[in-house]
Length: 155
Image 1 (cartoon, rainbow, N blue to C red):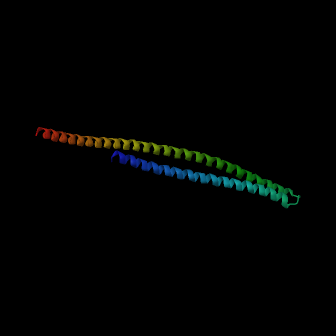
Image 2 (image 1 turned 60 degrees about the vertical axis):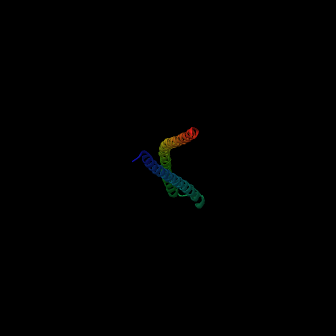
Image 3 (image 1 turned 180 degrees about the vertical axis):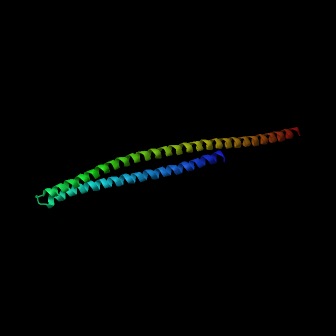
């Protein structure tokens, strides 16, 4: 396999990896949004629970009802703490995924620069070859014209 084909293949593979990394970033961002939505739902539910307890009882609460309410709110707070950890984990995953994406983009850019450099070398080589052919042709025309001129002068 020639070098340009090998580089093009490497670029294609690096592009796929970059695209996969971009999809990975998008997925972990969706997961983070979902975790934030769940947190908002838990916090809203906790606030609604407190509001319902105080508004529906008319101010008279039994000890049993208050105990159950506090147990329920305590479990809600535990769920909120767990969700906070889930959000922190999701943020860490987003950062890791973004680093991977950045690394793949740098790799792809480097490969593209290598390909461009090699293409520039090939273009310069072709240009030199064309210039050499043009120079040779011009020299032959000159020699022929000179010979015709000399032959014409000699006659």
